[in-house]
Image (cartoon, rainbow, N blue to C red; front, top):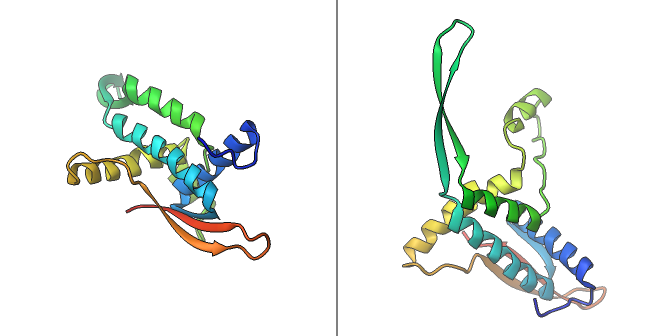
Length: 170
């Protein structure tokens, strides 16, 4: 990352991490032009890592005995070694945002909907973005990248900073 954004390394990485998390969660954010360029490169690395490893899963069959004494076989799908490593790396690269209760949704329904998901942003990256951008890459004959788009908005009133909207490409 060539641009220092006028911050020391710790503050700069915290800012980029927060904005990348917001971009991946909401799909679109408004920020300054320089920050948008930095976040775009950072998000591209995250999505590329997810695309390379999202299909690495391991299936195993477990047999258990239920209350009636019957043997029940269950199929468990776990992350493979590469996907697990990528998941851990992405967890370190973003701040995980939590699900928000929808309007007119009861507390019980919200708990039921979110009980199985421990890291909603990470799940969204692997379950939604990685397959979408992988098929997009296949349609473009193996050319990846270009996951974000930056629209320049002009100068901000207070400090005349060049602002921009950065969004994920569909």
